[in-house]
Length: 333
Ligand SMILES: Cc1cc2nc3c(=O)[nH]c(=O)nc-3n(C[C@H](O)[C@H](O)[C@H](O)COP(=O)(O)OP(=O)(O)OC[C@H]3O[C@@H](n4cnc5c(N)ncnc54)[C@H](O)[C@@H]3O)c2cc1C
Image (cartoon, rainbow, N blue to C red):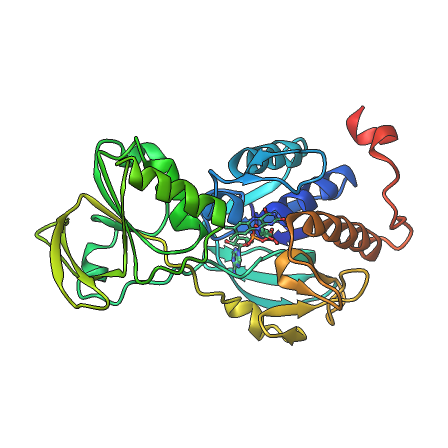
């Protein structure tokens, strides 16, 4: 991590940012990538690492965490400044550069590609007393390593993809696995819901519909929760070691919204070069919008290539936008 001025800074270490970093390396410009999370991969590693992805070109099926690992390997063929656990805060235009400020200090740059996805992740919380007191002491909203849950009594809360993915993945790892949702309507993919319901019938886990958490109990850490039936209001006590609350996250691009960029909701408007309304500032991936936009990993890849190659041309107008073919690039010799 340095405070030198780099040619291109990429905000966001998701699939879009990582592929952009690769292109910056291939074009031979100095680059930095910044992410607020402790590891690279964006949504792939933070939200659904154990999920198979079927629509990435060239991969009939790839586990999200494996795709992230390979994107990191591809990007790290070239030297880059990697700043993890850095939250970007301010952007001030300087003389032929931008003063980009993070919570860990300044990161000056000559151009910028914003690949911040839905923004810095802020998980939704359960509205129960003790949430803050027990945060990290038996209550969590992320799975970093499934092994953390081995042999434990685990309660999963949620009806979306993350909740059902982890329910499926943690059966057999957790000693006792209970999965609750406040209704019988799930947002998760039907296939995963069916898998979890079958696992419930086989006794591999306990899926409870129409339940929510009313209270959490314990001394230093959570050891019991009160569950309430959302219709009958009957309560029951469940012994737990870990509560995994997977009830989504609040999309919030945070300070980026204050930089004078043209926004449409939580997304940044770009033209066909992925250029924003500020010269030298590009956006790509989920955070960028234009007519016909699709929020997909594959479109993020294409947008990252367009953004970075146009940034290279912005930095040095004599450099072509088109990168040439990687098959004949000197970068790989
Ligand atoms: C459950 C689920 C399943 C999915 N399945 C598929 C699928 O099958 N196929 C598909 O194509 N897509 C799928 N998607 C969508 C796909 O994951 C996204 O389109 C993709 O991750 C977008 O990549 P990105 O790099 O633009 O953003 P992200 O992956 O969101 O990465 C953005 C990064 O920017 C960082 N960041 C944001 N703001 C700041 C800040 N202020 N400071 C520092 N860092 C910041 C964030 O921490 C994050 O790591 C799925 C999404 C989910 C939730």
